[in-house]
Length: 338
Ligand SMILES: Nc1nc2c(ncn2[C@@H]2O[C@H](COP(=O)(O)OP(=O)(O)OP(=O)(O)O)[C@@H](O)[C@H]2O)c(=O)[nH]1
Ligand SMILES: [Mg+2]
Image (cartoon, rainbow, N blue to C red; front, side):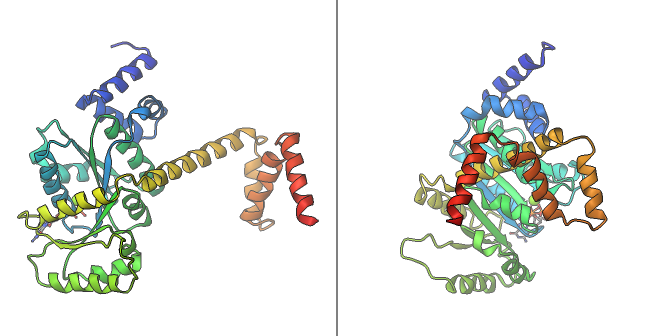
Protein backbone atom coordinates (compact mmCIF):
# COMPACT_ATOMS: atom_id res chain seq x y z
CA UNK A 1 0.00 0.00 0.00
CA UNK A 2 1.20 3.51 -0.78
CA UNK A 3 2.19 5.86 2.00
CA UNK A 4 0.66 8.87 0.24
CA UNK A 5 -2.36 9.71 2.42
CA UNK A 6 -4.38 11.11 -0.49
CA UNK A 7 -3.93 7.99 -2.59
CA UNK A 8 -4.61 5.85 0.48
CA UNK A 9 -7.82 7.76 1.14
CA UNK A 10 -8.78 7.38 -2.51
CA UNK A 11 -8.43 3.63 -2.29
CA UNK A 12 -10.39 3.61 0.97
CA UNK A 13 -13.22 5.50 -0.77
CA UNK A 14 -13.05 3.03 -3.65
CA UNK A 15 -13.21 0.19 -1.14
CA UNK A 16 -16.28 1.72 0.48
CA UNK A 17 -18.03 2.11 -2.89
CA UNK A 18 -17.19 -1.52 -3.66
CA UNK A 19 -18.68 -2.50 -0.26
CA UNK A 20 -15.42 -4.08 0.88
CA UNK A 21 -16.11 -4.98 4.54
CA UNK A 22 -12.69 -3.91 5.82
CA UNK A 23 -12.83 -0.58 4.00
CA UNK A 24 -16.35 0.08 5.27
CA UNK A 25 -15.34 -0.74 8.86
CA UNK A 26 -12.28 1.51 8.63
CA UNK A 27 -14.29 4.34 7.07
CA UNK A 28 -16.95 4.11 9.78
CA UNK A 29 -14.24 4.42 12.45
CA UNK A 30 -12.75 7.46 10.74
CA UNK A 31 -16.06 9.33 10.58
CA UNK A 32 -17.09 8.21 14.05
CA UNK A 33 -13.91 9.76 15.44
CA UNK A 34 -14.74 12.95 13.52
CA UNK A 35 -11.22 12.93 12.15
CA UNK A 36 -10.15 15.13 9.21
CA UNK A 37 -9.59 11.95 7.20
CA UNK A 38 -13.21 11.03 7.91
CA UNK A 39 -14.37 14.37 6.53
CA UNK A 40 -12.22 13.86 3.41
CA UNK A 41 -13.68 10.42 2.92
CA UNK A 42 -17.25 11.74 3.16
CA UNK A 43 -16.39 14.38 0.58
CA UNK A 44 -15.17 11.63 -1.73
CA UNK A 45 -18.23 9.38 -1.41
CA UNK A 46 -21.05 11.87 -0.80
CA UNK A 47 -22.22 11.91 -4.41
CA UNK A 48 -22.93 8.21 -4.07
CA UNK A 49 -25.22 8.55 -1.06
CA UNK A 50 -28.93 9.29 -0.82
CA UNK A 51 -30.42 5.92 -1.68
CA UNK A 52 -30.58 4.23 1.71
CA UNK A 53 -33.82 4.13 3.70
CA UNK A 54 -33.30 4.83 7.41
CA UNK A 55 -35.39 3.06 10.02
CA UNK A 56 -35.09 4.54 13.51
CA UNK A 57 -35.90 2.13 16.33
CA UNK A 58 -36.16 3.70 19.75
CA UNK A 59 -37.55 2.75 23.15
CA UNK A 60 -36.60 2.15 26.77
CA UNK A 61 -33.52 0.10 27.74
CA UNK A 62 -34.07 -3.63 27.34
CA UNK A 63 -37.36 -3.25 25.43
CA UNK A 64 -36.17 -5.74 22.83
CA UNK A 65 -34.99 -3.26 20.19
CA UNK A 66 -31.95 -5.30 19.15
CA UNK A 67 -33.97 -8.51 19.03
CA UNK A 68 -36.56 -6.76 16.85
CA UNK A 69 -33.90 -5.36 14.54
CA UNK A 70 -32.35 -8.80 14.27
CA UNK A 71 -35.72 -10.21 13.18
CA UNK A 72 -36.39 -7.38 10.74
CA UNK A 73 -32.93 -7.90 9.27
CA UNK A 74 -33.91 -11.50 8.51
CA UNK A 75 -37.04 -10.26 6.71
CA UNK A 76 -35.02 -7.77 4.66
CA UNK A 77 -32.34 -10.33 3.80
CA UNK A 78 -35.01 -12.77 2.64
CA UNK A 79 -35.87 -10.13 0.04
CA UNK A 80 -32.21 -9.74 -0.88
CA UNK A 81 -31.97 -6.24 0.60
CA UNK A 82 -28.59 -5.15 1.91
CA UNK A 83 -28.83 -4.09 5.54
CA UNK A 84 -26.87 -1.86 7.90
CA UNK A 85 -27.42 -1.72 11.66
CA UNK A 86 -26.18 1.13 13.81
CA UNK A 87 -26.73 0.67 17.53
CA UNK A 88 -26.14 3.78 19.60
CA UNK A 89 -25.35 2.91 23.20
CA UNK A 90 -25.61 5.78 25.65
CA UNK A 91 -24.49 3.87 28.72
CA UNK A 92 -21.17 2.38 27.77
CA UNK A 93 -18.20 4.72 28.29
CA UNK A 94 -16.32 2.78 25.61
CA UNK A 95 -17.60 0.61 22.81
CA UNK A 96 -16.59 -2.76 24.30
CA UNK A 97 -19.77 -3.71 26.11
CA UNK A 98 -22.16 -2.59 23.44
CA UNK A 99 -20.30 -4.30 20.65
CA UNK A 100 -20.14 -7.57 22.47
CA UNK A 101 -23.81 -7.55 23.49
CA UNK A 102 -25.03 -6.74 20.00
CA UNK A 103 -22.67 -9.23 18.40
CA UNK A 104 -24.15 -11.96 20.51
CA UNK A 105 -27.69 -11.01 19.56
CA UNK A 106 -26.90 -10.26 15.93
CA UNK A 107 -24.45 -13.18 15.68
CA UNK A 108 -26.46 -15.01 13.08
CA UNK A 109 -25.69 -12.22 10.57
CA UNK A 110 -21.94 -12.21 11.26
CA UNK A 111 -21.11 -14.33 8.24
CA UNK A 112 -23.56 -12.52 5.96
CA UNK A 113 -21.72 -10.11 3.63
CA UNK A 114 -25.03 -8.32 3.04
CA UNK A 115 -25.19 -7.08 6.64
CA UNK A 116 -23.03 -4.44 8.30
CA UNK A 117 -23.36 -4.00 12.05
CA UNK A 118 -21.91 -1.10 14.00
CA UNK A 119 -22.19 -0.26 17.68
CA UNK A 120 -21.40 3.27 18.71
CA UNK A 121 -20.74 4.32 22.26
CA UNK A 122 -21.65 7.90 23.00
CA UNK A 123 -18.54 8.35 25.14
CA UNK A 124 -20.21 11.09 27.12
CA UNK A 125 -20.18 13.66 24.31
CA UNK A 126 -23.83 13.43 23.44
CA UNK A 127 -23.85 16.30 20.97
CA UNK A 128 -21.50 14.39 18.72
CA UNK A 129 -23.59 11.26 18.53
CA UNK A 130 -26.23 12.54 16.16
CA UNK A 131 -23.45 13.88 13.95
CA UNK A 132 -21.47 10.68 13.97
CA UNK A 133 -24.58 8.59 13.37
CA UNK A 134 -25.49 10.60 10.27
CA UNK A 135 -21.98 10.17 8.93
CA UNK A 136 -21.74 6.46 9.70
CA UNK A 137 -25.08 6.01 7.93
CA UNK A 138 -23.68 7.95 4.95
CA UNK A 139 -20.73 5.55 4.72
CA UNK A 140 -23.11 2.55 4.74
CA UNK A 141 -25.29 4.31 2.18
CA UNK A 142 -22.32 4.86 -0.12
CA UNK A 143 -21.44 1.19 0.26
CA UNK A 144 -24.80 0.31 -1.28
CA UNK A 145 -26.66 -0.52 1.92
CA UNK A 146 -30.32 -0.11 1.05
CA UNK A 147 -31.87 -0.31 4.50
CA UNK A 148 -30.27 1.06 7.65
CA UNK A 149 -31.61 0.42 11.13
CA UNK A 150 -30.60 2.93 13.77
CA UNK A 151 -31.23 1.68 17.29
CA UNK A 152 -31.25 4.24 20.09
CA UNK A 153 -32.43 4.12 23.66
CA UNK A 154 -35.22 6.64 23.86
CA UNK A 155 -34.11 8.40 27.00
CA UNK A 156 -32.21 11.52 26.04
CA UNK A 157 -33.12 14.28 23.64
CA UNK A 158 -30.20 13.36 21.43
CA UNK A 159 -31.32 9.77 20.99
CA UNK A 160 -34.86 10.91 20.29
CA UNK A 161 -33.52 13.36 17.70
CA UNK A 162 -31.60 10.60 15.94
CA UNK A 163 -34.71 8.47 15.70
CA UNK A 164 -36.83 11.41 14.62
CA UNK A 165 -34.77 12.21 11.55
CA UNK A 166 -34.86 8.64 10.25
CA UNK A 167 -37.16 8.06 7.26
CA UNK A 168 -39.48 6.04 9.46
CA UNK A 169 -39.48 5.91 13.25
CA UNK A 170 -40.50 2.82 15.21
CA UNK A 171 -41.18 3.39 18.91
CA UNK A 172 -41.02 0.29 21.11
CA UNK A 173 -42.79 -0.09 24.44
CA UNK A 174 -43.06 -3.02 26.83
CA UNK A 175 -45.98 -3.83 29.09
CA UNK A 176 -45.86 -3.59 32.83
CA UNK A 177 -43.02 -1.12 33.28
CA UNK A 178 -44.87 2.17 33.45
CA UNK A 179 -42.80 3.28 30.47
CA UNK A 180 -45.93 4.47 28.73
CA UNK A 181 -46.39 7.24 31.27
CA UNK A 182 -42.74 8.27 31.10
CA UNK A 183 -42.80 8.24 27.33
CA UNK A 184 -45.71 10.63 27.20
CA UNK A 185 -43.64 13.04 29.24
CA UNK A 186 -40.56 12.63 27.11
CA UNK A 187 -42.55 13.54 24.01
CA UNK A 188 -41.74 10.26 22.35
CA UNK A 189 -45.36 9.73 21.28
CA UNK A 190 -45.15 12.45 18.65
CA UNK A 191 -42.19 10.98 16.83
CA UNK A 192 -43.66 7.51 16.23
CA UNK A 193 -44.68 6.41 12.75
CA UNK A 194 -45.21 2.87 14.02
CA UNK A 195 -45.82 1.77 17.61
CA UNK A 196 -44.63 -1.61 18.81
CA UNK A 197 -45.72 -3.24 22.04
CA UNK A 198 -42.99 -5.85 22.37
CA UNK A 199 -42.86 -8.66 24.94
CA UNK A 200 -46.54 -9.14 24.23
CA UNK A 201 -46.13 -12.57 25.82
CA UNK A 202 -46.18 -10.71 29.12
CA UNK A 203 -49.16 -9.48 31.12
CA UNK A 204 -50.61 -6.12 30.19
CA UNK A 205 -49.91 -6.02 26.45
CA UNK A 206 -53.49 -5.23 25.51
CA UNK A 207 -53.76 -2.60 28.22
CA UNK A 208 -50.71 -0.84 26.85
CA UNK A 209 -52.09 -0.99 23.29
CA UNK A 210 -55.28 0.63 24.60
CA UNK A 211 -53.32 3.32 26.45
CA UNK A 212 -51.45 4.28 23.27
CA UNK A 213 -54.68 4.22 21.26
CA UNK A 214 -56.36 6.42 23.86
CA UNK A 215 -53.52 8.89 23.55
CA UNK A 216 -53.85 8.85 19.77
CA UNK A 217 -57.56 9.51 20.05
CA UNK A 218 -56.81 12.84 21.68
CA UNK A 219 -55.42 14.13 18.41
CA UNK A 220 -57.42 15.03 15.33
CA UNK A 221 -56.63 12.94 12.29
CA UNK A 222 -57.43 14.06 8.77
CA UNK A 223 -58.69 11.35 6.43
CA UNK A 224 -55.44 11.05 4.49
CA UNK A 225 -53.09 11.32 7.46
CA UNK A 226 -50.86 8.38 8.37
CA UNK A 227 -52.15 7.15 11.70
CA UNK A 228 -49.35 5.17 13.36
CA UNK A 229 -50.43 1.54 13.74
CA UNK A 230 -49.97 -0.10 17.15
CA UNK A 231 -48.55 -3.60 16.75
CA UNK A 232 -47.94 -6.35 19.27
CA UNK A 233 -44.78 -8.42 18.89
CA UNK A 234 -42.81 -11.12 20.65
CA UNK A 235 -39.37 -10.48 19.22
CA UNK A 236 -37.86 -13.62 20.75
CA UNK A 237 -40.26 -15.92 18.86
CA UNK A 238 -40.87 -13.74 15.82
CA UNK A 239 -44.56 -13.30 16.52
CA UNK A 240 -45.93 -10.15 14.88
CA UNK A 241 -42.73 -9.49 12.95
CA UNK A 242 -44.26 -9.95 9.47
CA UNK A 243 -46.91 -7.38 10.43
CA UNK A 244 -44.25 -4.95 11.65
CA UNK A 245 -42.21 -5.46 8.50
CA UNK A 246 -45.38 -4.89 6.50
CA UNK A 247 -46.18 -1.67 8.37
CA UNK A 248 -42.70 -0.28 7.69
CA UNK A 249 -43.11 -1.14 4.02
CA UNK A 250 -46.54 0.45 3.90
CA UNK A 251 -45.27 3.64 5.50
CA UNK A 252 -42.52 3.76 2.92
CA UNK A 253 -44.93 3.16 0.07
CA UNK A 254 -47.25 5.89 1.33
CA UNK A 255 -44.38 8.41 1.54
CA UNK A 256 -42.59 7.62 -1.72
CA UNK A 257 -40.83 10.86 -2.47
CA UNK A 258 -40.95 12.29 0.98
CA UNK A 259 -37.59 14.00 1.14
CA UNK A 260 -38.61 16.07 4.15
CA UNK A 261 -36.64 14.13 6.73
CA UNK A 262 -33.64 13.69 4.50
CA UNK A 263 -33.68 17.44 4.03
CA UNK A 264 -33.98 17.91 7.79
CA UNK A 265 -30.94 15.66 8.31
CA UNK A 266 -28.89 17.62 5.81
CA UNK A 267 -30.04 20.92 7.27
CA UNK A 268 -29.08 19.85 10.77
CA UNK A 269 -25.70 18.64 9.61
CA UNK A 270 -24.95 21.81 7.64
CA UNK A 271 -25.81 24.02 10.62
CA UNK A 272 -23.57 21.95 12.90
CA UNK A 273 -20.68 22.20 10.47
CA UNK A 274 -21.19 25.93 10.06
CA UNK A 275 -21.28 26.47 13.82
CA UNK A 276 -18.05 24.52 14.28
CA UNK A 277 -16.30 26.29 11.42
CA UNK A 278 -17.54 29.67 12.52
CA UNK A 279 -16.18 29.19 16.03
CA UNK A 280 -12.93 27.94 14.57
CA UNK A 281 -12.67 30.97 12.35
CA UNK A 282 -13.49 33.35 15.19
CA UNK A 283 -10.87 31.81 17.45
CA UNK A 284 -8.28 32.29 14.72
CA UNK A 285 -9.35 35.88 14.01
CA UNK A 286 -9.52 37.16 17.58
CA UNK A 287 -6.46 38.87 19.02
CA UNK A 288 -4.52 36.45 21.22
CA UNK A 289 -6.02 36.17 24.69
CA UNK A 290 -9.16 38.12 23.74
CA UNK A 291 -11.54 35.24 24.37
CA UNK A 292 -9.99 34.62 27.81
CA UNK A 293 -10.32 38.30 28.67
CA UNK A 294 -14.02 38.19 27.84
CA UNK A 295 -14.40 35.03 29.93
CA UNK A 296 -12.74 36.87 32.84
CA UNK A 297 -15.21 39.72 32.49
CA UNK A 298 -18.11 37.27 32.56
CA UNK A 299 -16.65 35.51 35.61
CA UNK A 300 -16.20 38.88 37.34
CA UNK A 301 -19.85 39.69 36.73
CA UNK A 302 -19.04 42.67 34.50
CA UNK A 303 -20.97 41.32 31.54
CA UNK A 304 -23.40 38.45 30.89
CA UNK A 305 -22.48 35.73 28.38
CA UNK A 306 -25.27 36.71 25.97
CA UNK A 307 -24.14 40.31 25.64
CA UNK A 308 -20.53 39.13 25.45
CA UNK A 309 -21.34 36.85 22.53
CA UNK A 310 -23.27 39.65 20.78
CA UNK A 311 -20.38 42.03 21.34
CA UNK A 312 -17.82 39.62 19.90
CA UNK A 313 -19.95 38.96 16.84
CA UNK A 314 -20.57 42.68 16.33
CA UNK A 315 -16.90 43.55 16.71
CA UNK A 316 -15.21 40.73 14.84
CA UNK A 317 -17.79 39.58 12.32
CA UNK A 318 -20.26 42.31 11.46
CA UNK A 319 -17.82 45.23 11.40
CA UNK A 320 -15.45 43.20 9.29
CA UNK A 321 -18.06 42.61 6.66
CA UNK A 322 -17.39 44.48 3.43
CA UNK A 323 -18.64 48.03 2.77
CA UNK A 324 -21.48 46.71 0.61
CA UNK A 325 -22.71 44.62 3.52
CA UNK A 326 -22.55 47.62 5.78
CA UNK A 327 -24.42 49.66 3.24
CA UNK A 328 -27.19 47.09 3.05
CA UNK A 329 -27.46 46.99 6.84
CA UNK A 330 -27.57 50.75 7.07
CA UNK A 331 -30.20 50.94 4.35
CA UNK A 332 -32.32 48.40 6.22
CA UNK A 333 -32.02 50.35 9.45
CA UNK A 334 -32.98 53.58 7.72
CA UNK A 335 -35.97 51.93 6.12
CA UNK A 336 -37.10 50.57 9.47
CA UNK A 337 -36.87 53.93 11.16
CA UNK A 338 -38.80 55.69 8.42
N1 LIG B 1 -40.24 -12.41 27.01
C1 LIG B 1 -39.72 -11.70 26.04
N2 LIG B 1 -38.41 -11.34 26.08
C2 LIG B 1 -37.92 -10.61 25.08
C3 LIG B 1 -38.70 -10.22 23.97
N3 LIG B 1 -37.93 -9.49 23.13
C4 LIG B 1 -36.71 -9.41 23.70
N4 LIG B 1 -36.68 -10.09 24.87
C5 LIG B 1 -35.55 -10.25 25.79
O1 LIG B 1 -35.33 -9.00 26.42
C6 LIG B 1 -33.94 -8.80 26.64
C7 LIG B 1 -33.50 -7.48 26.03
O2 LIG B 1 -33.58 -7.56 24.62
P1 LIG B 1 -32.73 -6.62 23.66
O3 LIG B 1 -33.14 -6.95 22.28
O4 LIG B 1 -31.32 -6.67 24.01
O5 LIG B 1 -33.33 -5.22 24.10
P2 LIG B 1 -32.76 -3.76 23.70
O6 LIG B 1 -33.95 -2.88 23.73
O7 LIG B 1 -31.98 -3.84 22.46
O8 LIG B 1 -31.81 -3.46 24.92
P3 LIG B 1 -30.75 -2.27 25.05
O9 LIG B 1 -30.09 -2.10 23.72
O10 LIG B 1 -29.83 -2.73 26.11
O11 LIG B 1 -31.55 -1.08 25.46
C8 LIG B 1 -33.24 -10.00 26.04
O12 LIG B 1 -32.98 -10.93 27.07
C9 LIG B 1 -34.25 -10.54 25.06
O13 LIG B 1 -34.12 -11.93 24.86
C10 LIG B 1 -40.07 -10.62 23.94
O14 LIG B 1 -40.83 -10.31 23.02
N5 LIG B 1 -40.50 -11.35 25.00
MG1 LIG C 1 -30.00 -3.16 22.07
